[in-house]
Amino acid sequence: MARIRAIAIVSTLAIIGIVLAVVTLTRDTQSEPPAVQRCPSGYVPANLKLPEAESDVNINVFNATNTPNLATNVASDFTNRKFKVKKVGDEKKKLPDTVAVLRYGPKAVGAAQLLRAYFLDDAENQFDIHREDDIIDVVIGGGYRQLATPTEMRQAVAQLGNPEAPDGTCAETK
Image: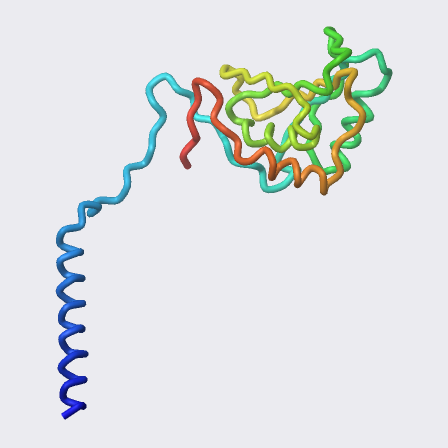
């Protein structure tokens, strides 16, 4: 008798479960896949993805101090960290109180975030929405002392979080 009662209870629960599953599936309002977000009209797609490796980042290094060969030395430090250094030179306008300035366009937003971490978030960002290359200009100022160690850089990346789309841009969808 107890066995028959147990089978009846389990059968009833199974039927109730099946009925609830069918009702849930038939009343589901999310039957269509989510629409892909597109950039609003007039916005520029920006690459917000952090680079997987430093070797994916192209930079130019410029010296905005009176210290001779500073750009060459910093470029060498970046090369040792596997960055692709394209140009090295002097900046006309001197920046005595600035650590660094990062100039970049929409294709380098994520890479600029990585570079900010190497300056422990002391670099000034200069975003140019009209810039079409993926190269970041690193302008070294008088406040520069040294690049962050790999451990400091990783901690800074974690503190900075994910890159955000600058004004007039939206996340690039690929």
